[in-house]
Length: 211
Image (cartoon, rainbow, N blue to C red):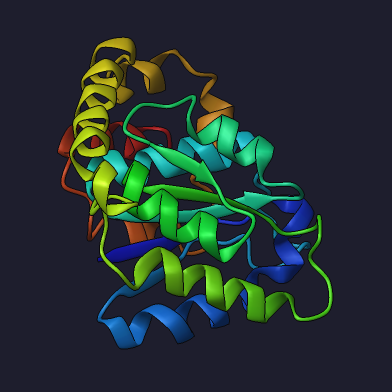
């Protein structure tokens, strides 16, 4: 699994800590981590939590990433933004049990975490435990055992509803403000990480046309 890490501007200073913790947990499991930044609060390319949502959708819809880890001060804004775009099923995680149950019950492809609220002493240990529960036991297996069948059925229903209620991402990109989209993909390492993995030539072509 290719996991993308995205940080918005208010919590960008914590990017290195989050990346280190994520890699520590998931790389021994055989997963790959791509860090899309922001890398520091002083980055030239600044991301709002709304742009994190668009970037998550770009990565997931084009196959450039299989999973996205993002967040903001509380995690709420990033979660709402991610779920505003097609192809993203984002959960809001605050503790390890959230990580396990979101993976097993909701089987999403994106998580938003609070990187300011309750992020104090031992924060990296809490993150480590969340990532262990989120990525360490598979996905979509259900919890508890007696609820597996209806939970898996409900997930398929939700996927079907989302397929109807969201427009294609390329159409959305064409209708969004061009400067907003340019700023979303202006990260220092975006091109090097995204284009080699992107499997949607139409979206890749549109992004390149923005200059």
